[in-house]
Image (cartoon, rainbow, N blue to C red):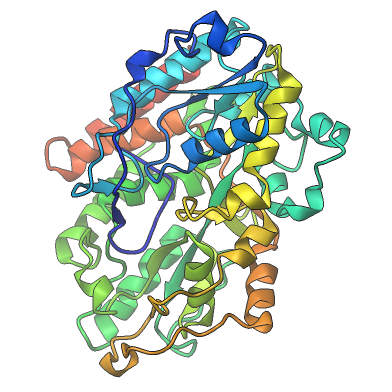
Length: 458
């Protein structure tokens, strides 16, 4: 399973809540099986998601909104039910679902959108939403924002909203998001990077040279699986490999097979690894990180590590964002304004300040500030193995200067990758067989080429 959340370390949570109600209490169109008497007179707004967040934030927001708006019934249909939860069970906070489950959601949503049916609100994080926007099946959120006297766009991070929509017509709204970076504990005199123009080839080459020359048994990068790293590389140079307008692909030219063999050699020599050993020991030259909460972002900025934007292809600049909670409204919805009101609530300070939203940066500026209050757990320490730094100390208040620094950083222009998640899944799935030693690089390259071309021409 792939998620666009590259969080530092192991992300699990022991959740002491009751089990989710079964998805069997909903019928096929997502509406709850209630009698007419219990729902009579209410406006029903349906919402389709692959899976609800394991922390329960979405369910809490649903109940809070319905309490405030008793004439509205929010019906959230998840295509993959969350695992049963119990006080003693450890749950993956990123959710758990298979590629087959994800494909089920994509196919069902595609059929619904293209036939003018489906839910009123749709989670599009795992869809090629640009394609749907071009076909006009997603509502104009910008127009709904302008018509809503209670909505103030200045309260949100407009740079993230603009980036999600490619700077054009607003059809999607990220509810939370991550910022992706590459960092290093090396000094600037040891490692110089121009992140406005560097590529993954530059990173791998410079990292390999330093790993050989510097003492300490260093590696280029740790804690990233081969297929996942390759996915990031292809996404960074997406237009080089895939031309969606002309429906062509370039995986079988020999260049891609060479990249596969290069990565396999680096993993085999230990210069790249999928374990966190050297990551924890601070012996990795480059670190692929995700700023997935306000405190993590602040601590990272305050660390002594060098921080850069990830490698790209020179066509994009600024921060790199991703979101696994991106919402759109079905243009054929009969309750467009009511659907927008619920999305607007999800973007409000009240909803986004809820502790249930902790795995992501809030879109609401005031909510970010509210989450910068440090509790008794103290600070997270990055980029050091100095045991003296891990001392119990009284929680420190986030200063106004620290808060301003973080807000200024988050507020920079940036972009979301404009790649089709399905195509990236093909790349990751097929290359897994190569890295497992089951298929040759040339064979895998041809398989990807054929699958991508077939998909593009469907």
